[in-house]
Length: 515
Image 1 (tube, rainbow, N blue to C red):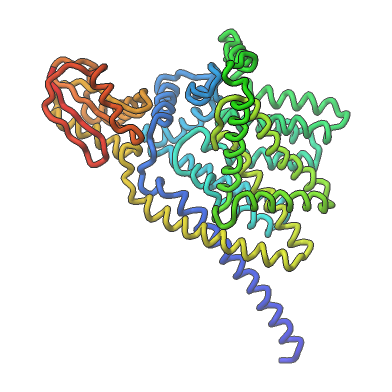
Image 2 (cartoon, rainbow, N blue to C red; image 1 turned 90 degrees about the vertical axis):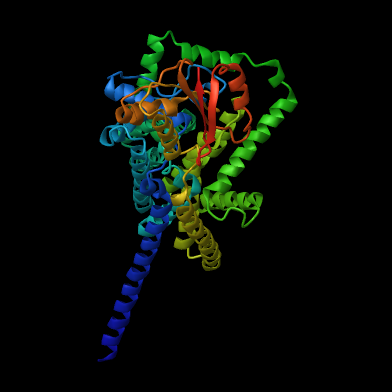
């Protein structure tokens, strides 16, 4: 074999090594994405609490009783500081798919959340390929795969947990609009930005405002595109508009009242400063929680490095499409911060889920720019830090999967609640009985649903709400205030002779009484 043959052989080996290395990376990526997201799919024991019970009762009404709705859950379950503002109904209609396929079994909802979570990785890969090529697709998907807030979205049914897929779709559509300036993408981007109110209203607000701010920069004097922007938003929010018209604009009136009538105790500089600190701490935690390895460096140092690098990247980036897209994504951070400082109530992590995705896109942009510009020393630092983060992610994935798979869940998960109700039915031995449930959230939605879905078809009996004859008390102790049910016993439940009191392995307390 001459030197040309040896050279061809070396080139072939080099190319094969690249393919093998890429295959190994993709295989590791699949493991990191798959296992921590699949725990509840495998054990069939999801969290089933207040929100899940409420949702399934609503979906049961839609599917079984054909009661279509224009609204979803009230914001903050009525505790958001403003009344009569509702999430959109889209999540209920989406949830009706597993409800039908799994015959009402709440465990079926986890398949929906799992599919949406895995599809978010697929759409993330396409975004990465479209903007940066295959390597960008792998990096973006890896960061999405190991992000704790995005992993959690696959693990229990909740309207806010359906957001990541639609946030990524929105970002993808906005990027294509910036790149092509086509009418279909301004319509789609506006629609998707607003459509997120079906899952989390608080996420939709900055996305809509961010896109409105971006539009004049792209459209200039193309007034037909502004009309399409309006049409997109109108279509997205049309269920809310119809509901408001039918109910005398009570949500809009309530929101205006919320803005104009500020309680006196919230006007002081101290209260405003306290609220500012609350918002700041929530945003800092949101940033830190986006990436694995939280605690490797102090968060404030990571923030300074991250935003310093992002500003440097924006100043260096020559591709105006990528630059504009990153300006749009980055602008969501100060925009969200301003919005939630205007609102007076406390904010929670699920209000700013779009920022988790925004940070990941921003970091991918920084890393890909460093790679394409061949900054070797910086690449080595990022590679070392990336290996540390992936090591944390791999350990967390293993720990989560092995521990949570075996977790019975106590009073929080589906099996504990089903077993507790089965215990009551079996103890009654087919005789009529009454049932009273104590639950810390006051409302007993999950128990009401399980009785309708599981207990009545199995035992052919619905318990009464009477204290005559045999009746049972099913008590879910409050973990933070385990004594709180005593007040319920002394006020709501006063009568009846106690036959026995038993604490089940799940932590539920069952008390049998005769009236």
